Length: 437
Image 1 (cartoon, rainbow, N blue to C red):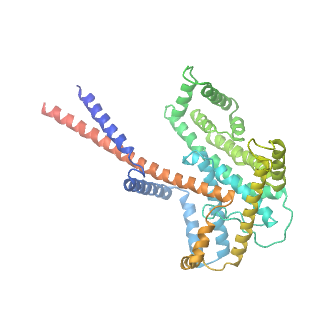
Image 2: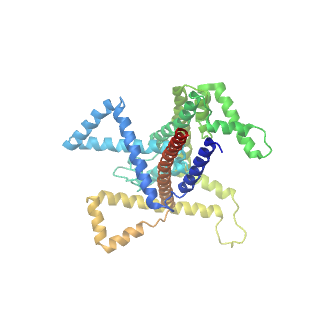
Image 3: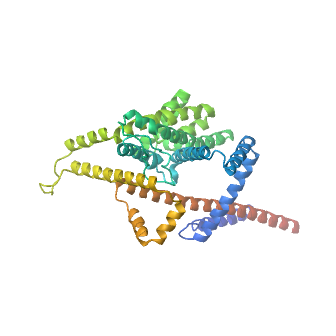
């Protein structure tokens, strides 16, 4: 057997052992090792990111601003203004970040609009009904605060569709801008591959899917043809084609970034069309739709229509039972009433509370009755609270999947270094044998 074949066989065996070991790098199988690898990967990433930020020209502008902010914060100057600034920054980062996660799949393919934005619109509509006005702060609806909105003080008034639209449109636009930013990685990957003279993996898979094959079913062929149409549509219409594809909920829009990158479409034309379509046109239509659905008048009209359309009785139920649509109508109204009662109770408690959060925590721990009351309050009894719990579970699953992904990425880096070292040892051994001969 030739030396090159022996070397390839040794490297292949090493790769097989590494692949087998990589499958064990999970929180269930090797929790300590997985957490250690994750911490190493995060530390390396933090070091590389800090090094890149420190060497970037923009840092020369941002760093003095951060120093001025820290000095103002330490001196206690304009605390109210600084607090308002911090709340706005957290609000923007939260919703733009959710939009980015939505485009890259949140690690589980879940849509953050379904998980966060649309429930946020529902909460705003219900809070406006409960408070009798729309002068409440919606910035509290973030990861660290899942409580209901605080109504505050103020006279009641009629809340119109336009008032609700203006209350949630900025949040939706920020989320839409994040979804546009999240489309940049597929573009750059495909663009870099095109510049290097290589073919993007996703586009190669698309070309393979378009080839005639008796092994593909009708649905797979329809999807492939739709993607082929999208490719030709982008190539024919350019900026306006991308704008049209980005202006409606399009699950296959990732392909748009791949195609634009592969054909070296100018970045700012691609991103500009994506930003306008996703960040403004699409979210405006979504806000109009969901505000119309979640408002009391339109909601009652929809439920009344369901009562008229669905069967009055189900087989096997007695004559005294309500129709399914009527039961749904009553259930939704009961859940909304509970939610609105909690909004008012929490708003009153928030206005009456003057203690720091850590003092409230100590008081709860010292009192058995307060602890029992807190535990009972954690039990969800409305649809909104059940959904919040489900959302928390998804976020926990996403965090755990990130830990595993980071740990495996670090282990793959170690494996690549091991393969390089093995190749060097084999090359050195082969060179030593030649010298001895």
